[in-house]
Length: 126
Image 1 (cartoon, rainbow, N blue to C red):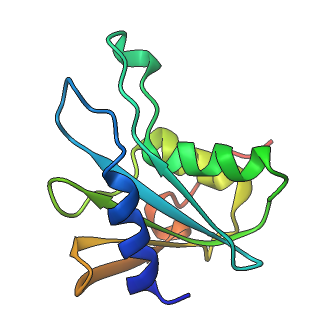
Image 2 (cartoon, helix red, strand yellow):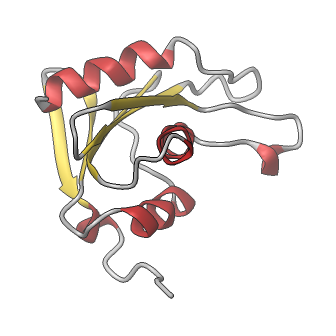
Image 3 (tube, one colour):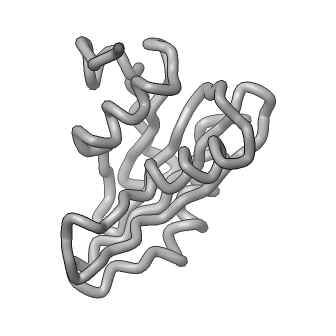
């Protein structure tokens, strides 16, 4: 799957985001090593610490269905380019190789791609 298609899947998923407090909607589309795409959205909570990001939602869906190998994730937001927060980056370290691709941009025609190792060069591993 090409990065643009993955980003468009993230954009479509974003429609289901639950962001009544921040109004900052985020969608993610996670590409597994076998070509399956798992989507996720941010789900806010009035107890802000209970909010979950779109990226972790996609990973949790994939892992709960037995998938453990990933190639890339695309992230779309209601405010343009959005990169994973620190918790999401560390979550990715748990399941991804350093060359895992993270894609975001203002729209599907203006995307940037980084490797996980660029966004979290020394992620924690047991």
